[in-house]
Image (cartoon, rainbow, N blue to C red):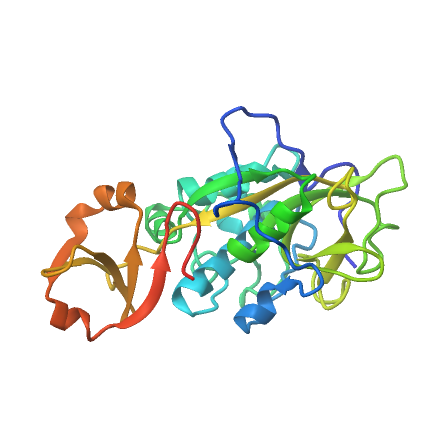
Length: 326
C-alpha cells in the first residue's frame, strides 16, 4: 500500500484569497437533502470509475481533479474517457512536491485538461507503470496539448463552506462532485472508513467526493482515492460528518461549474421563427439560458428553421453559470 508520508507531501491547505467564489445553492430557498436516500455519482450515471495509482509521486491534487473532470465530460458526452492528472500536476506542483487544492481547479478553468492518451500519467513503454514524482513534474505540455486542453475547460471553481454538510451534498448531486484535502496518517487510513490523524506528524492528501448518505453512525461522504484498487473498498473510502471538522479531518472543499466542450461538432443555433437559442450536439438540442455566455459566442451562431430544429432530439436545459445538463 503506497501511502503518502511526512507532513503535506501531496496536498497543502489553500492560502486565504478574498477573490475566491463561494459556492451557494442555485435554487430558490434551501433544498431538502434526502440523506437516507443518498446519492452516488457512479450509480446515478451507471459508470465505474478507474482507480488511479499515484505511486511515489505527490500528485494527489492532480489525480483528484482529473477524475472529477472525467465525470463532467461523461455527463456531457456520454463517453467515459480517462483524463490526464499529469497535465494538471506538472503546472501546479510546489518545490519538494505536492500542490494547493485550489490550484488544480484553477488550472482546469484557466487552461483545461488533456486526455490521458495524449499525456499519460503512467510511465513505461506501455504507460502502465505508476509514476514517480520526477515523471509527473517533467514539463511536457506543448502547444498541441494546450489546444486539446482548452476543449475540456470548466467555467468556474468555487469554495464550499466545510461546516455545511447539506451544501457539500448538494454540490455532489448538482455538480457531480467536489475535491477536498484531508489530514491523515497511516493508522487512520488503514481501512476504507478513515479516521482523523492521531500522530504528531500527519500528511496531506487530496480526494474526490462522489457520494453521500446516512446510516446508524451518521452522515457520510464517500470518495475515490488514488492509491490503487488494493486500498480501501476497491480504491474508495468513506468519511463521516463532524460539524466541527467537515467531513472529519478535511481542510478545504472545492467544486467545479462546468461548461460545454466547444468542439467542431457542436453548433450554437437560433431558429427563424422562435426566439430561442440552442446548443446542438450529438443530435440533441439543449436550450441555453445564459445570455452573457451567448454574447461571447455569438460568432458561432447558425440560423436554422423550426422544421430543421424539430429533427433534433430534446436534450434538456443547460444553465452554464450554475449547473450542467439536467
